[in-house]
Amino acid sequence: SFRSPSKKEPTLNIQNQTFNTYKKMSADVTLENITVKFDEFTAVKDVDITIKGGEFFSFLGPSGCGKTTLLRAISGFQEPSEGRVYIGGNDMAGIGPNKRPTALIFQNLALFPLMTVWENIAFSLEVKGVSKKERRRRADQLLELVALPGQGNKMVNELSGGQRQRVAVARAMAAEPEVMLLDEPLSALDLRLRQHMRTELREIQKRAGITFIYITHDQGEALTMSDRVAVMREGLIEQVGEGTKVYDNPATAFVASFVGENNAFQGTVSVVKTEKVIVSTGSGDLEASLGEDIKLSVGEEAIVFTRPEAMRIVKRNNTIKNVLNSKVVYQEFEGNFWHLILDLKNGMKIKMSQINDGSTQVYEEGSELKVQIDPKLAVALPFGPLAAE
Ligand code: ATP
Image (cartoon, rainbow, N blue to C red; front, side, top):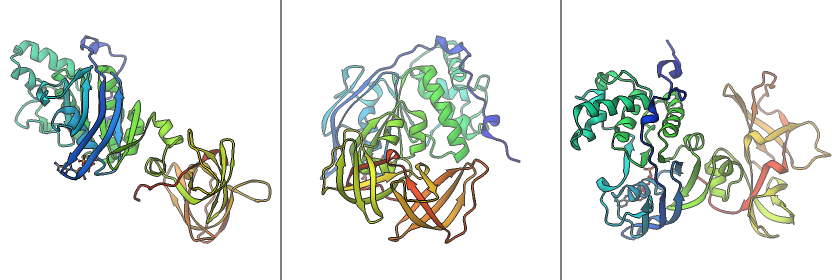
């Protein structure tokens, strides 16, 4: 029988003050013009960014864009070809991974199966020669932090996937890192648990107060957990900002197409007004807002992006702008949303989504619909590469 993970997994209680004894240390991380080359191939290109102490920061990008390589440069497993890494203001050049104030968590948690939970957590302390009593005390504190109080005597294989994930976090925390580096740690979990663990990880990070640097190709994860997100493509950072900024004000065509879903209308700029442009596309002239700090001129190639949830069905098209005639290809039900895949006159397919408020109509295949793109909710950006489907 089905049980929601929120019932199965104990939830963190932020009001619980037990963890105030945890020593808060967090360091900022500055990546100064970091380039990493493998022979002729450049995996990371001139990344220049400061991650603030105590920030939850994500690097988001498709497979192969250089996220892991960048994380390895921070942790000390990869020497950058150019540039410097500073942690807490200290230059990390020549400082090995085990001498850095960082801890790393992977998808493969690599917990010790033949040890109990608390032995796993206290392992690094034992190596350091911390007394058994103190190890036990610290492990109990950490179990409290990750919402597993009283579970210390269990064996690792007696835990659920989510609980193991938390033990891995506690174990990494035992070394008292100032910066936690997380390499797609949730990707092995099933969808529901993954979504649940997002909230949990974020709460743990807030309670511990340390810097988290998280890498993922999952935009949902990056948006829900992070204070800021850096979107990467082919070794380059395309945009850095809060999730809302990256979603609502994408800086490039790649960001617009990679973060969330977007319909992309390619064309040529025909009119430029203040903060607005008209782009002549294969689907007609579309008025759109100019992206923040974006300049376009008449004659330039551009793409108008509009989110599926930002379109609406209209009855007539004689008084409003940006109305497209379409035919329904199919309608799809996702519980909270109804999605419509529509065919435009020129053969382009677009997607529009309507919130399921209980009154949403069902449309037959082939029905004719007029949909409007609100110019305020459409953004025009210079032509550039799009994310692969
Ligand atoms: P994924 O999400 O698939 O792990 P990623 O964004 O983390 O991808 P990286 O693992 O950083 O990507 O790899 C970036 C690029 O650098 C890839 O094209 C990869 O093949 C290449 N690369 C990584 N490590 C090496 C290496 N040691 N030698 C040669 N090429 C490498």
